Amino acid sequence: MRWTRRGWRVTEVEALPGFRLRVALADGLTGTVDMSRMVHSPKAGVFAALADASLFAQVTLDYGAVAWPGELDLAPDAIYAAIQEHREWLL
Image (cartoon, rainbow, N blue to C red; front, side, top):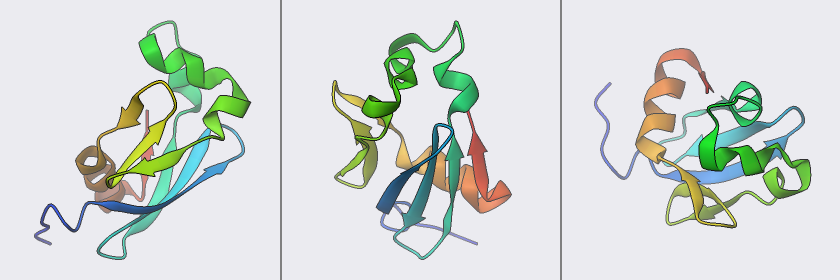
């Protein structure tokens, strides 16, 4: 399946229990992003802040990208590629 930049834009995001996200993309593709291992990893870097469940729950969309306060975001093209292949992105 060939996709375009418009197709990989995230149109909906919802925080789920366990540091997971439900996402919907512009072309209708849906899936989950599992950040549970990453936010608790010693290599989490700036994403370690998201181990605070109340901050994680503040997820929003910023021009088609998944974002949190503090200028944290996930690349929508990476989300799209992983969900297209596996229906889930494990970080």
